[in-house]
Length: 386
Image (tube, rainbow, N blue to C red):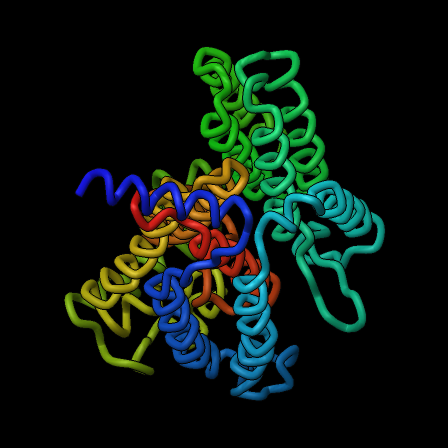
């Protein structure tokens, strides 16, 4: 039996190295993504229709956010399927292009971006609004994974491993910080550190880097009053119930009133103009109000399954670039879910990050669907005996 298995593995290796064998994708990941996207359409409409009726920017159209979400899903879902059929190793050859596009878009948004809520984070191209920072975090990931796979033996070196990657992280995070968008800059920094760890950088160097990053976080936070106000209200939102603590308190009311099984679809009270961004950043609170603790737990379970299967794909992939990229996509996906739900439940300070596949938001939906297409492509090149 052992000899037979070894023979099969040997044949598989030869075929895989010759790129003649492309297996089936991980359909459990595709299924979870499809269910979450479909459920997202339901939640976007339920959370937004009343607000859209009263919001002039939506032309008082109850279906405004739903139609936009359907449009972006109609574009993003086929892209995900198409990317899943492409050999992911082709993407590695485009690493410099992805990085260059990321930098150009981040510079462009600073020069010509739409000014909204005191920041320039959106760029309008051909009538479509995009958020370059969402694209940049995956452009950086592809660049880093490629570099670390090609310089595997040098990653423990500070000069040849850590410094080139820190420069790349610093350029992207620095441009995002200028928008200003500190929460996204922190997420990009986190992505970079995780990838450095996975890529084989020295642990001591990473710990020192982490300590410096924590100090830098508080220094940057202290440079803007609104950031410090958010940190203060995070621990005690009741101290400013009509100001910085308002949104978090409304989120608490929504989640708490949902109870175990929720009030039922379309029966949220907080979405009736009490909570802002209920269709986007705080949609999980509306979800819990309508579907309760059980509904929220089921959704978290689906997210957890995607992350788990993504990490399995990473461990089974024989190509180092594919392995690093699958791990990076899975961890970034899971971290974004954690940040969104952490903010909504008061575990983290208030910031604006979409809940993948469920929140209203075109750029986030398109980018995460494309990233999942890459993950599905990598899953087709894993060792079934691993």
